[in-house]
Structure formats: structure tokens, C-alpha cells
Image (cartoon, rainbow, N blue to C red; front, side):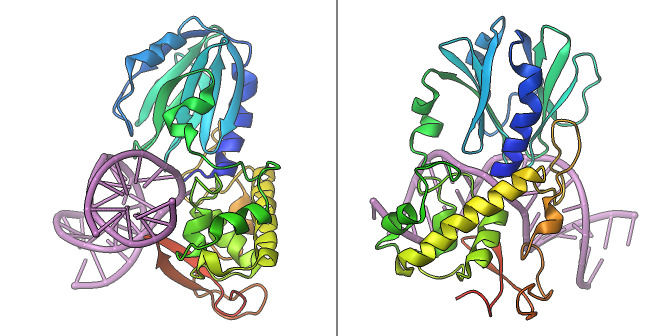
Length: 271
DNA sequence: AGTGCGGCCTGTCCGC
DNA sequence: TGCGGACAGGCCGCAC
């Protein structure tokens, strides 16, 4: 479910509630997430939230100076703001209870999400260490994509979804960006020109920014921290539009499995 | 080193 | 209705 825009939307939703508050306690209802939730996360108790940020699709809640919590939403996770004494619903796996009675509650039916502790600097955490640049940062460019792609024979779609190359581009936005740049998802990454990578980098930045502005994409179950969906689904150009006419040339859009993920594209406009 | 796949889970939908 | 199978926004870890 959540790609970068959905995680960013979640971050913006919870940040004002969290920053400056003290964590009264962490209630773990079900520790069996993607990795078992370790007791070290209980260090959060009694610490003050000095800031919240996002790295790739990870949410980082800074607690004091020397560490904090890491939350990943996996495929079906969401965080919502509620009162600590609200009755938990199905799949509500943990709560971050604050000193004002508010609560950040994690819900995740598929349990691919994660909760872990990190010691500062967060970048050294094993889950973050190998990650490539943020797509909305200066380190990300067409030149970066071009340079890193030389010699790579796999499909460009897999390449841009590889977190070591660039983070945050998931299955929806990979299809969208490739359509916007006119690049066929199966084209070998190493056989795309610098000029076309410039267009692709621009498309990635553009689609992510617009999706953030719309509060993310809700296809099935993504909800922001207020419990509301995102509205970018109506802006999607190819994703889940198999057989429907391409907005540019009217030919029917195609769907294929690439790297075990569904990919959507226009056979006419994308080469 | 790059690439391809299995696996982790539950829920939903579709065809029989 | 019931049941099996496919599929769903991520990503690690293992083979080759």
C-alpha cells in the first residue's frame, strides 16, 4: 500500500500531535510484525518527541537526542490519531500513548509493517544504511539514474523500484512515471539515454509531489492519520487501467507482470 | 555485483 | 453458499 506519498501524508498527519509531547507508554498488543517487535522499543517510555521525519518509506520518531522509533507501514499499515482509551479495533497492533491522553495507533492487517528502535544517527540502522537518495532531494537526478544504470540488463521498472538506486518509488508510481516519461517498463535499464533518464527523473519527482499534494493514493485501504483516504487515485494515468484508452493516444492500456508485480503501460506511447 | 524468486500475512474478489 | 486460487501499495534474504 503505502509508497512515499502515503508515508509522507502520514508523517504530516502525526507530526503536530507528536512533536513536543512525552511518550507515556508504548502498548504492544501484537509483537509479531514483519520482524518480532523487540523489547528495546520500550526505551521510548518517558522520552520527549524532539522531531519526526521520513527516510524512504520509514517513519522516524526522534526521542531525545540519542535515538528513537522506526515505523514502517508495510503493504497494509496505517497510523491514526485517537484517544488512548478508545477501544482497539481488529489489527490494531500497537499504541504510542502520549502524556496528553492522545494516542498514535498502528493498524496493519497483513503485518508486513515494522516497529523498531534506532540509536542515533538513524542512518546507521541496518534497514536504512544501504538506501539510495531521496527522490525529492538534490542528490537525485537523471544523471544519477543514468550513471547507476550502466551495464544493467534488467527492466527499468525494477531498476527505479530498487531502494539502493532511489527510495520511495513503489509499484504505482513506477508505472505512472514511466508512462509520463514515455519509457517502456521492460526496457533494459542500461540501454536508456541520459536525456531520457532526465525525463524519467523529472516524472518521478512530479508524480510524487502531486500525489503528496492529493494526500496520497487510496486504492483499497490506505487511510491517513485522520482516517480519511487520499485522492490521487483519480489522477492515475495507467495504474489499474488495463484495457482503458490511453489518455494520450486512446489505444488500450496493457497490463503485464514484471518482477512479480503488475505493471501498466501504453504499448503505443512507451518505447 | 546484478538479478530472480520465495516468503512473510490477511482480506477480497472471481470462477466454478 | 462454499471453496480454492489469484492477487494486493513492500522488501529482506537467499540462491545463482
